[in-house]
Image (tube, rainbow, N blue to C red; front, top):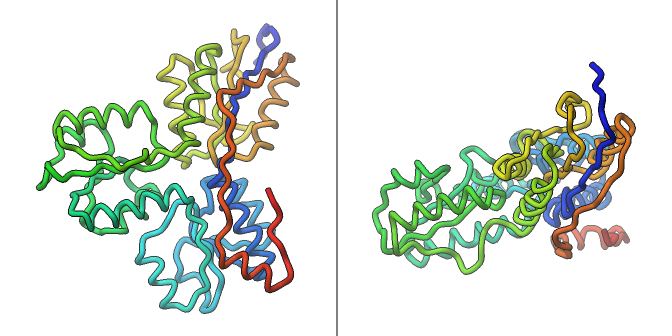
Length: 326
């Protein structure tokens, strides 16, 4: 179908796409392939993006759902979303060589679980049921963490120690949705405690703020990201809440061009695990179809960098290799 369409101005969110945790996780798999040689096994998707997974698989990474699929003595990388201690123990029992690519900001939440339980707190985790990060975090203390997924859960929550109640969160939640849940928890439990620093990660916050900035100028926003990417889904929700029409697309083939009817300005962002090459393909296709220009809308500059695990650095040095600076 053809439309009489003016040129389109593309507002490109910055920051967008890969965060420091995703960069580190991908780098860990790449370096593990150099240090140990293929096959290197990866438990679950290293990050929630099939293009990243397929690229690493083409280089010799083997993605598995469970450790039982890894042969004895194999090298296995744990994904960026974190794992329960039981998984780590299973790997040790099977004699596997492990490399932990858990995002350090997810590790922070795991450490908080241990710390606050030891200090006698009852724990509540705000997050999405079944998400890999939530499964790993709750696995730190099976049966001892109550999951709250929405305001309704907060209203219905029953606790034993309202005077010693600590709330933690998944790192990739909507800031606005989480604020509403927190408000209800505070109403129910006035003595509610929070960790010294927020659990929602800097990258999630920055990308949501960037999308809000786009929504003030663009009636249509495309978020490039996988359908199982929590932070990408949250970006779509944030854009809609800010008044824009928003769609999640895994790649340019999922863009429906009738969305553009009557649209002169479109915003484009990407979830924290979406490669920039996919974003550029979406933008270039829009421009080739309609003509127009691109304006980058920068809300904050990110400078966060996480180092690779020391055991991987040691393995690289043993082969005379050095991790390149990304």
